[in-house]
Length: 608
Picture 1 (tube, rainbow, N blue to C red):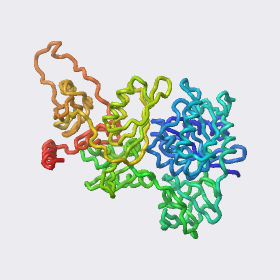
Picture 2 (spheres, rainbow, N blue to C red):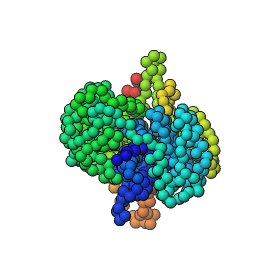
Picture 3 (cartoon, one colour):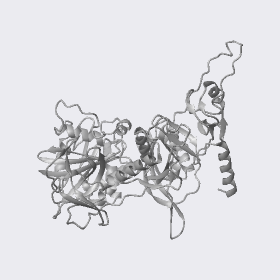
Picture 4 (cartoon, helix red, strand yellow):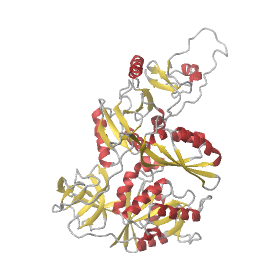
């Protein structure tokens, strides 16, 4: 059977997963009466809840006697490590662009990688049914983007389709026909070349990694040369040609629609998953025993943020989760690092803790959320930026991100002001249609930690921020952090409504009556700059006097609700977020007030 391998790449929320849904439906992959979930490719709970793709996944459809392997990729820059490797598996890419928003940073990032490898993309302008769609302008912007990324003449001569994945049509012209995805599938057969097949024994490069409770570790990749059968002996080489392990392939699975089915023989050019090699991972070459040269693998961009994951040592430890020991947390993180190449896990200098470095807050936040759902309890520190030292000059260099903010014109002033306070440089400012302005900044990653929620408050929820790692630049100096102190509980017990009511003029609370608190736990935000220790357990003194004013019911202002991302952005260096399957609490690193005072005095004496 003829083969085509194609990836769908786009910015987050431009409609990749919905497009794959329509292709699967219209190619007859589903039965007429089959119940299929919307966004069928987003398989795990977190992807469904947040409406984002986190893991790259493959599927395949048959169209006019050709099998098309389609890879759906994540759109968030934090999961860019997935996208870079996937492009090595395919021979073509469909670049999906929103007809209103145009090409955004992640589109630029992935397209630049695709053009470097030499892929000839197909451009599909999606969501032309939007009221603020401007497809012709966006088509021009895409051409400018390709030209700016040094595309070759051939790559610049890209075919364009317009359509709406939601309505299930794509066509060479805006007018239609608006009946099916047929033009896109035909274009893939015509424009994407057949996979190049090298001669020689079996070789394949591992690209996607996952673990299966029955089959163990499963590695997905494209077969470069030779054929593969179950029970065939194989060896694994790393990027430098060292042998990692030798063994036998126990199962060969191929994508058939949304299902993966065992097959008896896989041929070169096809994308398959193999099981039976417990040590093989991404960027490793799986090959026949006689092969000595590994396949070239792309190096992964370095992580820019790190966090310390520690054992939860608060007085409430072990009351809500069942996986609480340092060894369990360590094993889980090392297991995650095997499958996720953009994460780096190392032993920390503190006891019972691990350093986890990744691409961004979202990626680390997703990892913590996944762990807490699995029953883990842990405490995590504030995200820190990884600063490099230039060996030649000795100067400090920090990661800089390209930030694109789309905002209503009336709010552009406050955004520019806040971003300049965070040591950002304004690169470009232009109208983007519909009374909105597009602002482009180069901003240090440090300054962006926790800015998302502030941006939404400043712009009444109308701004859209997209960011992407740009490079390293000289250290920009101190960035102003949180301006307010916190309210810290002085005792352990259950919070009392009367005490919280009395403390309302001190600042907004983060807890509700009846919640368990302990000494050193953060219960609210102080209105001033210093931290304040408060007693939230103090009950009302009862008297014999009964009057309406005395017995008035306590009415509390609703507390600040802390989500995981918000909590990570909120805390300072001397604070931790305690994460359990049921709750997210904020606390001081040192729970004892005397210890905290000692630490402060030590910092003052050392001049830190």
